[in-house]
Image (cartoon, rainbow, N blue to C red; front, side, top):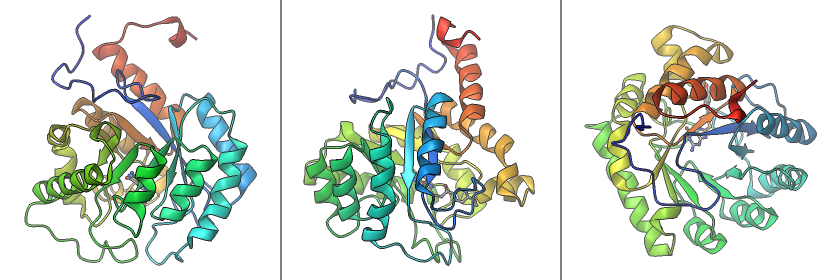
Length: 290
Ligand code: YH5
């Protein structure tokens, strides 16, 4: 059978990640002030239950985060972050899918790696103090995300002369920094950082250029789920009502070579991705029979 989008060859092999198909990463927040509508309030047993449910619903990866990137959110110390994340990682030891930790702190990377996390997801692309070294020493794969500015103020006046070229060059330089620190390219996943210091127009330009980012020779992750640009383009103020737009943007990114979708709505996204793939390339197997 002919692959749907043969122009995108799979990224270099990475143990634990099947690049022959799109992967769905489910978002689990262990924060006190989650604002994206998932209703979790820093509750550790609830986060464990949510991650287990997502795994059952077909998530390929769980992304655990304890820091809110909401403008005005209180900063979280590495100690607080570790105290929230470790019991969740430990409570998920028997989960068969990899757990990613969404953190900007080297101490958190080290602690979570020891506890069994399989992936480091850093919205500051390992730019924080000691992060490159901590990630390299962990031996784990990493997500390098682009962000302009800092979470508290990044949406005040995002500015680029050429957003695609600037994000591309930033990621290229961060790959070089990783390689110099001993993190091989096969362990690097890139992310244009939708919504991080970008206007709706910037986000649309970046998504339109998704395929270009594959030229950097790494797997690609995109996070569009419930984000503000979906609300801006479709006039939907409530993040919890942005699933249709999130699916449209996510499937579009897959068609342009994205490998991982980071999402709040796992069963809905898994269904959409299965249909996308069924039409495009995949023979239907027993696994898909209900
Ligand atoms: C991402 O894109 N995003 S946290 C605002 C929303 C909805 C969702 C107003 N961590 C990413 O998910 N890590 C976050 O509605 C991330 N890529 C990677 N790698 C922000 C978020 C969100 C914000």
